[in-house]
Amino acid sequence: MPKRKTWTRNKAERALRESEERYRELFENAQDAIYVHDLTGRYTSVNRAAEKLSGYSREEIIGKHFSNFIAPSHLRYARENLCRKLDQQAETTYEAEIVSKTGRRTPVEISSRLIYEHGQPVGVQGTARDISERKQIQEALRLYSRALIDAQETERQRIARELHDEIGQVLTAVRINLQTAKTARDTAEAARHIEDSIRVTDEALRQVRDLSLDLRPPHLDDFGLATALRWFIDRFSQRTGIVTEFEATDDEQRLATETETACFRIAQEALTNVARHAKAKRVSVRLKRYRDQLFLIVKDDGVGFDANALYDHSKRPAALGLRGMKERANAVRGLIDIDSADGKGTQVRARFPIA
Image (cartoon, one colour):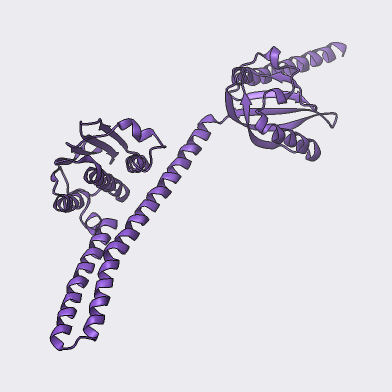
């Protein structure tokens, strides 16, 4: 019987050692920083990921209070979370910044829980996950949202200006003509003012039609990308006097609506920039397919610009339209490259997946 008890005890001890070894292996090899600290906040154990995250060795961390590693701006919140954990005995998750040995600040998501012995809390075990990439994505989304709002405001301002400057003036002229016709001394004079009102009303209708077409050309919905681009380029050339060439291959096959819209708007924005800034005499637009990709190339012989300004958010609104083109391409998993230099013209190359 004693031998059987000894064998059972040895087996239990061996199982315990194996369990501890597995825990230690998981603890040390985890991608997230794992730590244990006592109820006062002093570390008693950390893994290798915690050393890597903080830049401190294990020996430098053990015995230190967590306030030595949390950024001052986040320290109060970290302390409040510890107090809340002790009061409510609940798991907590919050974001903070770790300050490394070199002073580098890393955003982390901290999740922690109480450790109990004999029913009483004796410490805190937690993980700190590096969320730098998440923060970068959030910041990119914030900038994208801001650029989108700015673009919407710019478009609204343009429409308001068109309505006020063009349509408003026409309607004012109509009103004056009709008032004059009302008080005219003879029928012939009244007829002249009415005829003039008809003429300016026709002009107003044309301007409203042009404004509507600029907002959403029906050609894009009814006939597809190539036809819509050909129509827009013809109007662009007539309006600006810039010689514009258009070449499209295999232009009958329809694409996803969002892809056609993104490609059309990029071409529209590129040509608008040519008209406003490039001082170009000629511009070419090419639309072609190759395998499972659609390519758009807009090239002008204008004055060009410093392409580095495209990434400078302080140079607004000059770079806003160019950044907007990149964001439109990204929204449909496309890519865009803008090549320009002072005096060298500009080439916009966009590529869209169509598979």
